[in-house]
Image 1 (cartoon, rainbow, N blue to C red):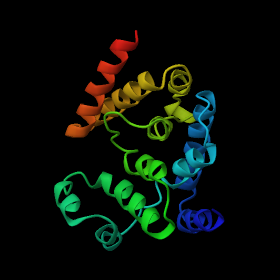
Image 2: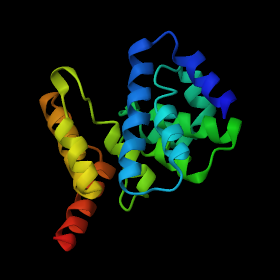
Image 3: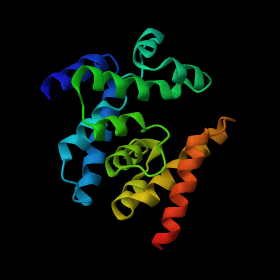
Length: 187
């Protein structure tokens, strides 16, 4: 465990804002997990810590750790590359668990029927507890109903995309529709 954390700190040391972000995501995801009595809190923390490992990587790194078909499929939305590359990097070099792998892999767009750890990291990645982007309400919602928090995180993303004249990708819409359906049955 120490070696993987050293790798992360070495990688993000030159990006202090990103390092602070991953530390916050890890802590927030773990705090949400505690609320749901999730058993493996270290796994949640590690997934949050590692989720943005490949944020500033080169195309060579992406080409090494992402399948060619995926590179081609998402060439117009390269924002996803860091998630896929990081998940594959840690799987190949550290043999991370499937839970951690999925949480890293799906932290940007989510997916229908996510595991709890995926939801924790996905939502925590949208929570900022300081500055102008204060999303304390999203944190409180996550403590109350993680599925509703997934919907809210997606809605925040959709709003941001609209402001930049961008469209959500298909999996984001599918994820949103899935969780809208799930929460209808819960009410």
